[in-house]
Length: 456
Image (cartoon, rainbow, N blue to C red; front, top):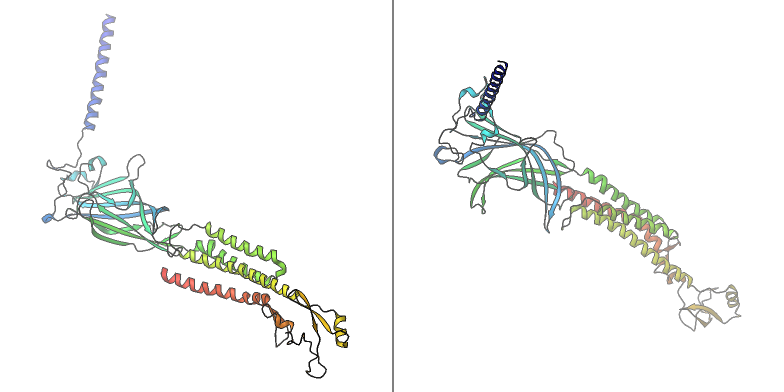
């Protein structure tokens, strides 16, 4: 009797467990096969675009909200221009009308005229296919799923939104670097549907920027320029609707003023101190000029300069500074050569012994020794009547020899007004103290107005 009761209890427990499992399986199947509340018509084909009046194209309104712009780096270059890339993080919004949908009113919450659809439901809808024409990479942001949203309105308008990032290629020109202004477009175009089937247009909001967006080296010009056009694509053989937004990047000059222009100007001014150092301080003068030159070379080779083939505005500034320091170094070489010549000619002046001169004046010596061309020659002393009390020495009846000051006209002379001896290398140093600063300031006054005028 007890065994029968145990058997009946075991059978009852087994039947109950089977019923529970069947009930859960039925509920799971119902949840899995539940149809969406948005009912598509039986003849709906998502590959066919929505119908429009008189065969006009479907209008797709497009808008962008730019969250961030970063990673402006060099990617490639050729002999005429450079291809730069920058990354744009943004929200894109598309809106179009889909009259084929059958929308029941009970899917909307009370007081709302829209409902958010699941991505699985949206996959059954017709969708436009715009793409970024000049992008290297364009991807929808993902974490656990793609950041997309589909909103359906009562008037059968579909609104698609997505968070995405795109890496855009831009042809940049650097003739005015670092005062350059770069205009980089982003082209958005329909891929498979030509302009007779789909027309893209900017919505009222167009392209807006994050008010907190700041770039390290650029100012982003406002407002952005928007264009709507039709572009012919020979690869796809047809005209396709295209949207274009132009980003205007104005480079900030403050970084280059602090890191390049101000230090290089100080180095050039430092080289002018060499004109106040005499030739007795040759090691200090050479060290100062060579150090200035090496500092400029290191400064400009280590600067963040775009490696392009043509001449930039910064190259002209670099050439002006280095030419000024090189000219100061060349001036030192010139004055040193003149000083050597001066010392050589001074040492060639004949040194007549005082005794010989006194004997000659007394008439006890008929010749006087002189040094000419490195050889000693004997000349007869003759008296030429000049003025009373004056005696002129001539050799072999020839003309009188010029005075020492006249023989040194190439490297030294005597000021007729003051009677002070002027040495050429010292005069060159004095003139250089004024000429070099004046020439550099003229260069600065020509450089900056022309650069600012062209950049504006």
